[in-house]
Structure formats: C-alpha cells, structure tokens
Length: 155
Image 1 (cartoon, one colour):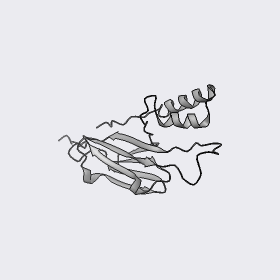
Image 2 (cartoon, one colour; image 1 turned 180 degrees about the vertical axis):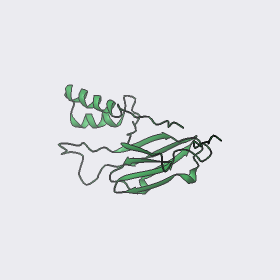
Image 3 (tube, rainbow, N blue to C red; image 1 turned 45 degrees about the horizontal axis):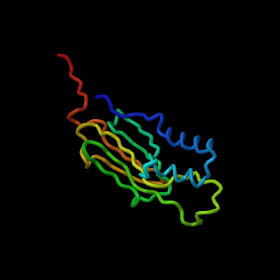
Image 4 (tube, rainbow, N blue to C red; image 1 turned 90 degrees about the vertical axis):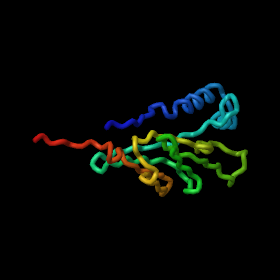
C-alpha cells in the first residue's frame, strides 16, 4: 500500500513574499504584523505549524511531530473527520510588554491548523497523541490489518 502524504516545499512561501514586499515597500513593523495575520479581505490567515512525518514500515506506524512551542495540551485540538486528521488551536502573544517599543517581533502567534489524510481503515482509537516540550507527537497505523500486504507462498 502506498502512502498519500504530501511534502509542502512552499509551506511558508506566502509569508516570505509578504515579508519581502513589505520590507521593499518600506512598510513599518506594525503594518507588517497586521498584514501577516490578516489578508486583504480582513479574514485571519491560519498559520501552519512545521511538521516532521516518519513512516516505520516494520512496526506499521506513522509518526507526525508538530512544532507547537509554548503551548499546553489545553491549547491544541485534534479532530478526525472524513479520514482526515486536523491539528488546530491558537497561540497568543505575550501580554508582558505593551504594543509600542517592539524593535523586532518574529515569533508567530494566532490561529494554526494542519491537516493530514489518514490511511484507509484507521480507527479513532488507534490514533495516539502526546505533547511534550512544545512538540506534539501523533501516531497512527500506516495500514489497517485488513489492508496490510500479505505474502502468499507458492506451493
């Protein structure tokens, strides 16, 4: 059974372009932050947490690790619907400092979401999740036992 996981090489490309264009056009830092977090229509653009995906064919397990620095398990939602696993939530900006006075503000904050297509036959109780030191690890079977490749010996 082949996997249907997609690598997204241009994952941050729109953010990169926004940063490059705002710097080129001489926008202030406050405007750059506002543009990052909202599109022209004013709708909030979801962030996509970085992810590592590992398939262990011997153990028939897929492990997805998501970078979620500074978040607690209460801040993260994991939903399964129509064979798709979605990790979402919201990180908030620190209220330790007032709005003025920022020289550099590179940390991301706001709503985030990332969706994976699960292999056919994966049941909800087979999906395990654990958050430790800002890394969410989600594991699930690569293939259900009914769909696993079976070797037939010739007699």
